[in-house]
Length: 275
Image (cartoon, rainbow, N blue to C red; front, side):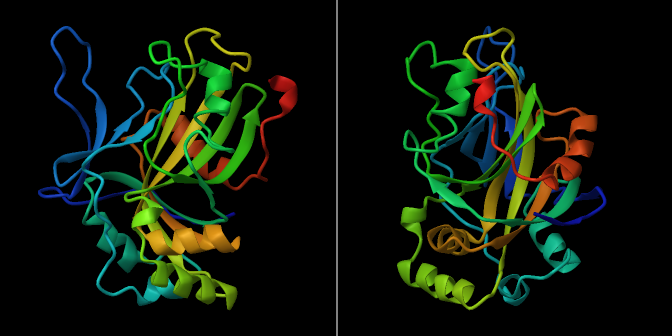
């Protein structure tokens, strides 16, 4: 469910952001370096390669070791109904200066373990790209993650949404997860916060039985790791404040502009008729 959309705006930290979307130093003979999300200058996630024909990717690296919970979280615990400009400013200070669009979503997360049931990389992605040619295996994100939403764009394109924790759920404190589960059971809908990118990927030619364009909306979780796990375990909804990094994804301007409308559409799985 899409609850609120903010106007795109330039925000962020122009001097010392803690998170950056960067290109790693290009190896000799290569046309581009790896695309990364860094935390405090350390590689935290490898992202989809720049070409747009390679498969979608978020792969956890050694730099993904911390969360970014604010000192005062009263408004996040209460779950504001609209966009909270103070919260947006607080989290924007962690990010590189750039164009962002705030989105307030309501999600019902499902925890996914790589190579287990529901894993996008082992199921939908393999159906389009096939197995990785060298390893003979699906892409491996090296982290559990959450699936929250998907919908058809048309017969040739489908939108998938993911929430990617900066640290795995096994690092969460069990007592805090239990407390949030009770909070959710009482009817509360707290808010988590993420920085997000939209990658639009499709193979250059047909490689698997289900060829189409994958729109992948990835929310990298800044605050709310315990809340997200509690919501997944209890089947309760949670609000997610997304700061969509407009220029950091692999998507054209018109595709990013279409995203709020697509995210407000009725959820829909990809038809088996296409597979």
